[in-house]
Length: 322
Ligand code: TXA
Ligand code: MG
Image (cartoon, rainbow, N blue to C red; front, side, top):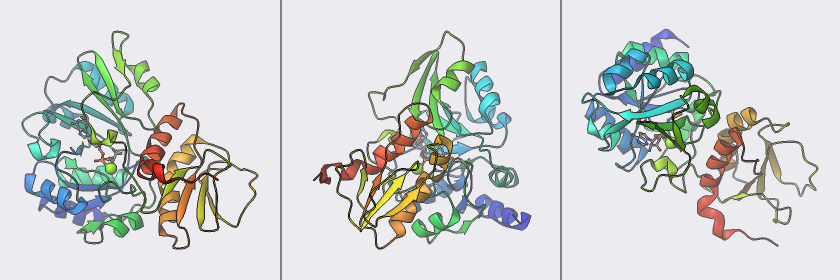
């Protein structure tokens, strides 16, 4: 990556514009988190409802001290263990963070991304960068620059860092007193987090009663065409069906297009290739409906199936089993 590109992107951020940039998870749509007008442009371009708060990306743990209040030592322990990396921690926010970033909540989600281009951009812009995934609200998350262009053709600037490595969004937790709540599963599992926190902590793995994180909505990350979970060999696959599989399978092929996210059920590979497979099926005009094989919901499988179920949710009642 040409340093001049990052320099230019940083100038766009400091002058109140928007830049799409790679992180290790998915591409983000970034603005200066301290500039409410710039942040408003994110909501406009993404067509994102104003009740859906943004994650703030920083490049050093020092910034965490400035952007949050009453931060417990334990949070720094988590940050040191998992950052830079795909863990977002939701904490009480300081006054520096404008309300528009957090949709009026008193908390803010923060992380240091594990991607050199993202870190250079944050350092050069010299401000925290608020960034949701760089897709239209509710649609598939982007894992390469082409996915961003497809959904956001009018964006000011895209830093093209190739394909992301993790492929699904960060794990999100909140820490309140001695309670850690999982708001969104990701590649960093709750067991890894448990091992880092003292035994006095309790863990809340269920959805909070009130909708405090729109990432918890049942429908999200959806392709334009019907997507069904392929959990029964009885499901009717026609030639216009696209099938996403995660391991080699003896299938009686009906001429359908098949995309493998992995050939060995390797969960890291499945996560990395999940959104690309969905985008490829979405882009293929010959495909009218997509079927995706489920994975076992343990470890990283929990985060994978979270995305798959949300992507398929709005189509689930229309399935035909013959
Ligand atoms: O990996 C990621 O997290 C990517 C990259 C770009 O960093 N970002 C991402 O952002 O996935 P987004 O906006 O698509 O999803 C962020 C989720 C939203 O569902 C939002 O509701 C939740 O984080 N969130 C942000 N701040 C929150 C807060 N203060 N309380 C609860 N949930 C929060
Ligand atoms: Mg998103």
